[in-house]
Length: 197
Image (cartoon, rainbow, N blue to C red; front, top):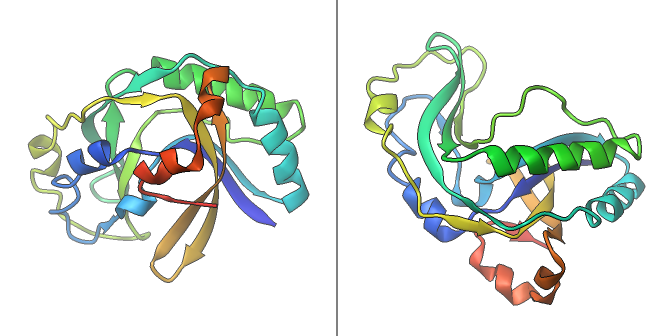
């Protein structure tokens, strides 16, 4: 069995813009550069042979490359029961379209995906259940956060493994948005901060 999700890897230019926002809240478990990503669809735990079917279906998805810019911050949960801190996106429209394509594709092979309302974001920190903390002015002082743009011309299928230091993510496969992207080599992905096979 393997735990999977679909997402976008982030370039160092975007990761660098998130540095100052990752701090200043007691009890927050801040995500490392290797853990930061933008989720497109959560799949969950499936047999390994199902992962191969998922890869085959995802490889058929096509989309036009688009710009991803991170902008603003927010919180899931409440100040009394926080769940996560996140960075938002400037324009979520192309992400929403790609998200819907992925869900529709996976449902054709009877893979159950999370159909809850999708809000594109990058999780900056998580909180253990029952954490009590003081946010102070974290939201207002980071409200002007804005990253340089990143061209999104592919997406990735990630596996997730829980470790003593938090979740570890590996890019199991990458999928082109267009035929031209197929010319990329593995060396091109050395720019990304995460782990890949």
